[in-house]
Image 1: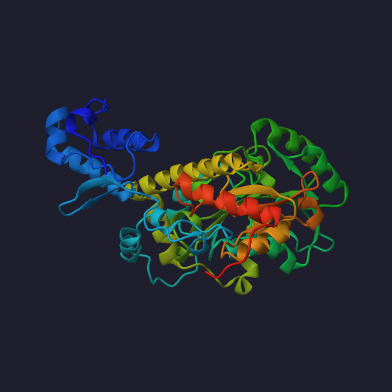
Image 2: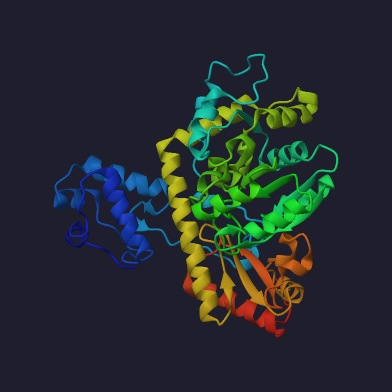
Length: 448
């Protein structure tokens, strides 16, 4: 493992604040200038070299430790974390469901301590959303909604929204495809009639949405940031085109954002037609599944209907969980961890795309997607072959209303989640080789 001296590092630093020093070192790590395992200078040496206090460097190192970019060991000094260290094989990580990397979740201790001390805890009431949470999530909603509501996680939020949106007789739901994991399962459980809306790089295709409306769709669900998309992120120009298609209709718009604060920046139909748009924000992938809190923001009439569907209108989400979520979203330390998670997930997506391309595989992914879609001749056969190695991936057909819609130019596709992939080109090359063999039908099953 290499060691960096204080003089060499000081030449790369142009700032003197703790956050600025941490950011510049992080940039050096992301660029590969400080490889995994590199030992950083001592706090005292680097402080003396750049002319700041020992406390300033200690704060910078603390920021980097919070983001799990570096680690400090007794007698081992402070080193750049090796993200691939301890990786035991692709059979040990989630490549299908889109769960976050546990190492990239923010700490919750202070948030829960703050929530438990709030004066409203255990007061006899059933607020559907506490004011602290509304203020914390308001920046994530790019329009001014009539009403707000919290729910017990993304699954419940999506269920309540779709049930409220399709409660009227003869309701039909237009669905952006490919859809996010879990969306189609929820829709099928509701038993509501559906029609697909195709997408391209810029988002839902206006002519496809027009066809869906002509077929009788009364509501449309889509994901502007394309959290699990194969290629799209909604652009401002496309949003305007879709709004023109929707003009003169009463179509309800549901914007599902399964990545919450980790979602890429995208345009929103809610900016153009806020009176008919409800946004569903899920936070479990950003802050952990045990907070079990999601947010709905949109038309008052729809949210009142959604609230009534939960225990006859008497149910509400835990006030402690709401307050804890608000606290973690506002906490600077947690914000740094979430920003770092965004960077690392994006890096893992780029590394995976590079590895698949180098292996001769055709792979695509949306600019803010957590999924990479890899083309194979027969997706079911390839997925089955990979499962024999303990590598569990999804097939594209599961993200479409009709299996035949998933095929691109007569080829099938596999969908892999990137969040828990190792940031190691060599290991990703091994995964690419396995997928290539599975696609060719030459991968033999083995015990794991």
